[in-house]
Length: 301
Length: 271
Image (cartoon, rainbow over all chains, first blue to last red; front, side, top):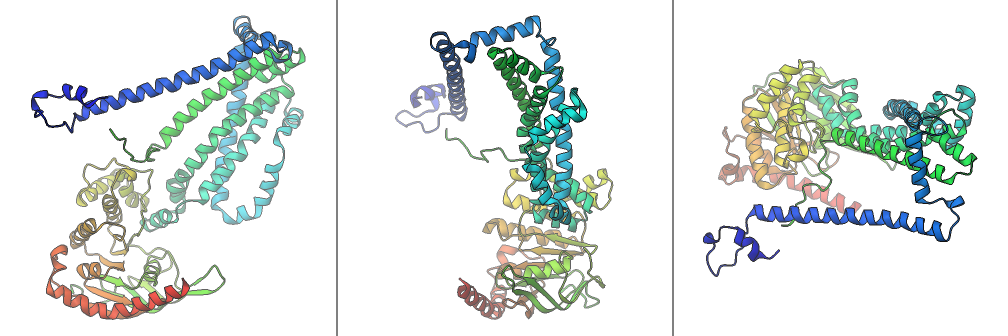
């Protein structure tokens, strides 16, 4: 990025001979910055692809020459299994129907858990006495290893989707609840005072101030919460069901099919990543009012 | 100055406010404060930092109750937030997730004005404080001075008859501060509102007010009450160098400096 080369792009007739050009044009500097950024992005993605290739390549090699693929499987076998599932269906019906069941369970559990977590969290955050009285009980409930409830829910609700939705719900509820609670308590006092003076009622303060200011807390919890919903659905299916990714995994385990277990893991990972993209988009929309992460920092040209 | 001594709009009699401290003691913020503010009058309260000036405002606004004594606004004892009160806080109190327009429209809308009308009124005030064109901006996109303008527009959009201001310009740089003082005088001249302006900046107090009240070091009581007879309209920046201003400044500073010294001694004993 020599100064001469860009100065030539500037109108050379305007540059006095012998005078070092201080300002090559803003546009030139900007486009240079843009090019440098694009280059950097390309580098990062290339390296990421390399990491992935090294991991799977290494695994493939190791499983071919040293390890027993019966226990550890290998990428080509997993790929075959995934391909087989999508091309010819699984032993439990078409792969799409299994994916759709798992996704539905996770989404229902997530939505119900998030709604109840947000509503109760904000309620507890604003009602001091309620929070004071019930907080030890909530702590105790939170300490229960909730994943075990999956077994109980199968007894209560049967092998259908309901028991998995219930498992996902309890897993989602607590992180969302605690964040909503914290968010509702950390509302800026001055904002509330100002609103009161301006004439806002309690309900208006709740809607205009408490809920929006708790939103960033709540959204932060929703990211991890969808992961929990998926775990809840899959563990529920694993514990007993007639369809779903968890069932595929448990069937694979029953037939000592390591590749099938890995394939199930990959599918659930993809589901989680897709959900992350959707949630990330929703978060950016809802938090548009926030200053960009880097503040108003500038980049030197 | 422009206030007839009829029934005061704000009336404090032996108002006292105590707080429980974290260490289990009692802190008396203000003690036996008597204060009358006439309709349309601009009163500034000066005193050493942390002496309880802001507490006086929060008693009048109804945000806090007096521990003893009476606080009346427009002849009625303060129980909740009195009607007709506006309050401009020292720190930013705008909602960061709302645009300028939505923030300024908030007051009228919360008081039941239909949304469209509230927005029309908000636009007028945004225009009046000189922010036309910034309606769609969020707070983080505005400078400190612009945020103060939004706060001013928000408060004034409710058309208060008493405007309480708690060191609103203390965080601004000197030039912006002078500009905002001038703006405040200009906007206030168009209303019939009384203003109670708390500051630790004596220059600011004199430049703005009809009366400057000096409060003592903590616990705060009213020490002195100086009428400011400078002509209006005032040009804030020129006024500071006039001999009249300097004379008034000297007179009030003689009263205030003793309190500042006391406050400093207390502070250094604590430190």
